[in-house]
Length: 278
Ligand SMILES: Cc1cc2nc3c(=O)[nH]c(=O)nc-3n(C[C@H](O)[C@H](O)[C@H](O)COP(=O)(O)O)c2cc1C
Image 1 (cartoon, helix red, strand yellow):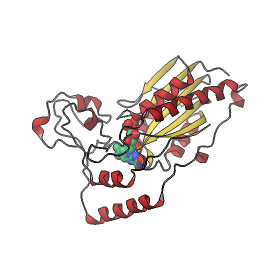
Image 2: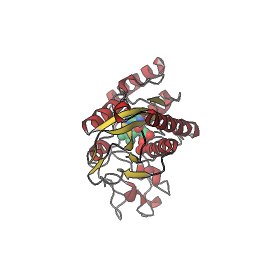
Image 3: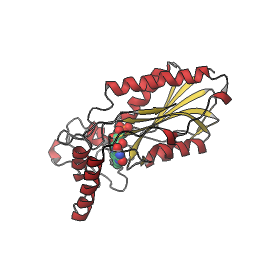
Image 4: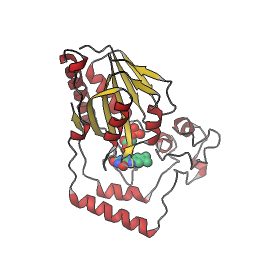
């Protein structure tokens, strides 16, 4: 079977899902690539055909597909279109997110021919409390490229669309998770909740004089929670805590210091590895 076009689709406020998806597409060797970036706005209604290959990558929020990503994906449909599904998570757990994405994809006319779980720097990661800092690293991206090559081989060796078989994403290997750090994490989360320590609802600027009102945070905010010209305020009802504003701030004026990140940093130091299924 030949694939005419790769359709690269992602929602990626802090660019880790984007990096992984791009590496996979590079690995396929397909040069005709159409990109749909759902991060800042929904896409136009679009139907992909059977001769395209869709590579769809989204981040994991609270063990689920980031809700805004799922919402924005709804403008896309397949027509028995082969799809590669990828969830990118911050080294804690991806829980049911890959299954959710698979459920969405099948409902929307895609045939899921491969799946992957990759690790990205946690959105809440900071210099003081790093969580999977620097991921995806070169090794992750090499694995993503190799995944892309394997996908291309799978497609090329299928005699026709019917024989390009679908996968059951539930059978993907779970990453190794040692019991004690997980137990420690759960105990600490319960203690944190019991203590009533407030969890900040949005990132903020501790020293307002550091903000130069360049508007970059507003430009990078996927949900319109920050308005250019009024960068000191964040609309808590709209904010999805993706931390695009924190990571894009050239002055490093904005922070999201949540007590939760301390626990993540302490309990998920051991780095997980990407897993793929073809
Ligand atoms: C609100 C929120 C919730 C998150 N929940 C999880 C989670 O449940 N498990 C996990 O491992 N990482 C979690 N993360 C981390 C992201 O999945 C991770 O940083 C991902 O690489 C971000 O993708 P992006 O760079 O494409 O935005 C969460 C991040 C945010 C902002």
